[in-house]
Length: 266
Image (cartoon, rainbow, N blue to C red):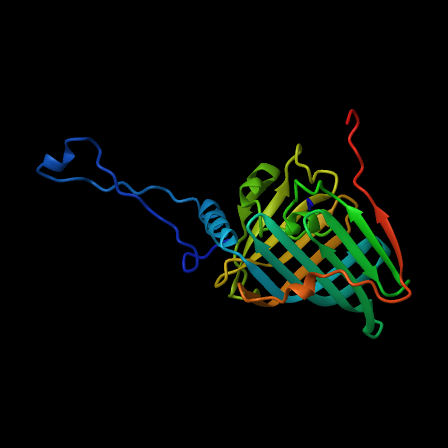
């Protein structure tokens, strides 16, 4: 899972700078004439997001994951809880999906857990009573757990903010009257040389104005499928019990371990 941001002046710290036209203007009879620096709202937003992400130690909240396939007129909605914790260079992420709803059918219990520890991705599938652990990085070169997760789900904006401009053309979306006032939106268009070019064509990204953290992502794939992820009722930098991230294999479940594929020449 690893690949796969808005503003109102009221919520983002846009800045202007005043400068003197020349070194000696302080001695001019008219004084310095202020020159307004044209602020880039996207840059201001990314800067604030970058600062907030750098201070993120833990995150806990509800997650809603909607997958739509317009061509097949099909959609499924999964709901659950997301946990994230970071200490130094080590991080862990767990997503516990608890229910599933297919189109107009009744919501049903559907337990499916994903655990990322920077090296391993483990899935505990309660439907088929099986556990799969896939190694995605070397033990001495762990990847941030959110980065691992985004390889399969378009959860962006928590890490590597500086990389967004490399992968996307980013524009500020026009505010709409029917949209929540607590969110601001960026539109991300995948660049031709982006690592996401084979996965997505566009990504719409909403940020919580108060928390300055991601609240919603809508991504359109190259196959015209749509991923929509909502992060609700967040708790930021609160203590999370380490046991939450433990991989406990239920009795009777089978387990399949897939080691990291070695690169050629190594």
